[in-house]
Amino acid sequence: MENVIEAEDLTITYNGKVAVKNLTFKLKEGETLLLLGPNGAGKTTLLKVIAGIHSEYTGKITVLGKSPRESRGYVAYVPQTITLNSEIPLTVLEVVTMGGLYKEGIVHFNVPSEIVKKSLEVLGFLGIKNLANKPFRELSGGQKQRVIIARALMSDPKILLLDEPISALDPKAKATVTSTLSKIKEELNLTMIITTHDVNPLIEIGDKVMLINKKLVAFGSPEEVLRDEVISTIYGPSSKTVKVGERVYCIIGDVHLGGGKI
Ligand SMILES: Nc1ncnc2c1ncn2[C@@H]1O[C@H](COP(=O)(O)OP(=O)(O)OP(=O)(O)O)[C@@H](O)[C@H]1O
Image (cartoon, protein in one colour):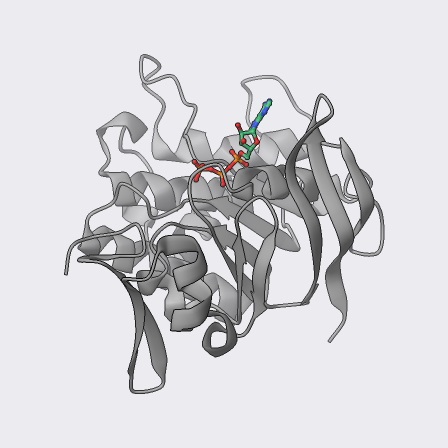
């Protein structure tokens, strides 16, 4: 397996001010990285650098062997906030076709039939073809997130970056979005980086976990990173990990890592 992302001593700044520093890690093709850290830790900032949309950094980072800017066409970035004007009554199909139109650089409303066909295929692949003609703004949070993921897949990315895809969802919707991501991982073999405050629902799809807090705190397998002595350095002495079967889960005080109450 090839390394698709390599960072060495990466320090990212905004107008000269350090946001996150000294990140060194490698991610192989098809691996899923769960990126954790408290508010302001630098998670979104790192995704933006990998996506080639923020370039103020020192150190080295390559994406698919090139600079992030050069690899932009192969990376899909799903931001935390879905910026679709809810005043415009777009259907799900229209939202997904947008992903194909961006790729082709097309800016007219006469959507080529092959893009419509592909959009329906992608919706079918994610098991939500039945939503195609529904107004996007009327969907539940979990349905919206899956549609936005479908839109990101329209550009045939090799790398999928997802910023907080399960935050603000109820536990059932978290599980549905996680199984969508699991399907993408299994069947499309994409390399994914997923930021989250709630690692537990996603733990089953994480090959690697990175914990940052303005610098690299830990990077490795879930078992290597999700240990009491590691997470307590960031989340305090009452944070704990528990092993259930083969999986490790995090508990912080009476809440899971940034997530729901237990
Ligand atoms: N556009 C910007 N200009 C200046 N500083 C910024 C900008 N975006 C983020 N920062 C700063 O960079 C640091 C990291 O922010 P970032 O949004 O990457 O954190 P995060 O881990 O994603 O946080 P959260 O979990 O709250 O989304 C913070 O100190 C933040 O204030």
